[in-house]
Image (cartoon, rainbow, N blue to C red; front, side):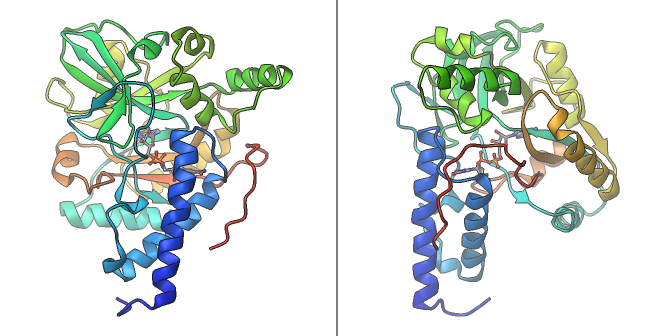
Length: 330
Ligand code: NAD
């Protein structure tokens, strides 16, 4: 603990909060980021550092206390009874080992992890009643999202009827494959329209179209990886759940792997960091999840992130984006 915050630290926290909020609106609400994720992450980490040293500087509207951003759009609102959360980040294998250590201490012993690719898209939630798709929504601010059912129904990988008549809220990622992204931007450029900064923003912009025909033309796809509540499922682990979701009719990412220790996790991270550019879709890291669903439930979550998972973020890919570079001045 660093004692009382000086006026300059207080000012810095305020500036960072305002800057991150403005960048967040451009990214989440306008689907048009004005800085690289790396720049956002650096400023965010600095704010976390200040707030950790001076907890009285934490404000309820700090980006560290909120998921995404407020929903301002023409779509009707959907309340997520079980919130859709964000994810804690780490940027090095040493920090990853700290996460593993924290879990081991919390649980009182070693546990298995499921490693998954962190798909660079946007989170969606699909509600099924008696196995029929009745609603699809965005994450929004985690508690309130947008009803984009008509648009999601145009995506071929989303089943409108499950193999079993379950009541289930399934969560996952909607993304634009790299090839569709390149073609879309080519066409937009030829038509004199603004190009999308990256596949994530192109997917977000495509899902939030008022005309579902436009969404249908954008060639989106999905990988589902979670449920709001495990109760309707038979699975006992994250890996089993992915297979159960697949059996129900969802598309899951097949590259997941159970790891028994940090060395296995590091090997998975290294492998997919190498293979990243060969994948047909963008990834911005690896997600490491405690494999036991019962342990996931007992570890729970903070206001913003689950305690049982962490994202290992990759450094930005060279020549990946055409984002306007704005100086970070704080
Ligand atoms: P996040 O993207 O860092 O991580 C959480 C999300 O990961 C989940 O909501 C889910 O959608 C996704 N995900 C992908 N694959 C997954 C998998 N296999 N399992 C579980 N989840 C998976 O968190 P966030 O809150 O959506 O956004 C924060 C990040 O967004 C920042 O770290 C920053 O990089 C970026 N951002 C950038 C700007 C900018 O201006 N460039 C602004 C705001 C946020």
